[in-house]
Length: 398
Image (cartoon, rainbow, N blue to C red; front, side, top):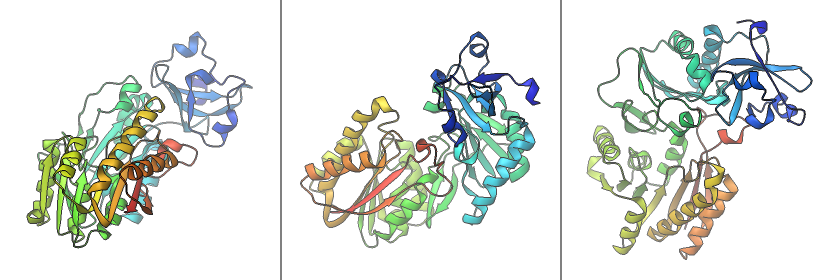
């Protein structure tokens, strides 16, 4: 595709072209001159973005049905967005992961930060799970997958169509096998000496959350000979890492029976099932019940879903984070540790930290903040896009 064959979209005179030039990757629908021709673009159409003086800024993927109308793909307005272009992106991403990780189990593509806006690729050995969460990526999915297979040599590619991001883009929520044969059983993944069982076809998102890997590792260092409570545990993220770190026992709490079953399988695979227990139920109800039972733990960690997935949900989400802290703090023994996590990009670190501090204070506890953790290096942060730095993990000594 040549420059001359691409349509163009133009910024309004008052739009912040400087931010785009300095690396911000998105253009919102109210920042464009939206004439009849622009509105008629099909979702996923590639176009050249121009400033208000008609100077080209780069090639973008467009979606007239999305609040994010344009996503910057390449700052060269003559760039060819084809299989070779995708392959170059994958090679860059793969080079960094291969330097950091001993085995091919990681997030290979973290959307904008790896130069593929809206695209997530998690790798599980010979299997990759792809979330094409932007219309342009859906349109060019064949070229993208061909490049992925060529660069990595993987034998199976799965598409995960679930999630809020695809809904916001007006895309289908279909999942399926794109290349090869899907695994017929959960895939074991070893991280921080713990074994996790990843359900790549029926689990949440891509089957496993790689982003918490360094925070699991830090928590494990607090857990030698400790009694541990892991709330919102999913497949046993913090509890299995704690057991690998020498915890005397761990209780995993989650609302999903399927997730807890995978956690139990992970514990058995690692040979720690005799120190592991699970409890299914609403996390808030279980925290309340444990307090009524007089239970205490040396380490309590709460890793809830995104309570504030967007700015309109921020205040309600912060109240939920405060409530988690208030209910969890009384369960921590004197001198013990409390880990509180948020994956809500709308709740920035100061706001989340404030909500946690209020909750701990309302519980009548005093705390030292000893560590602030973020996502691992396979989830790089794009400095110009605050949303790419969504994960925060705070560890307190009470």
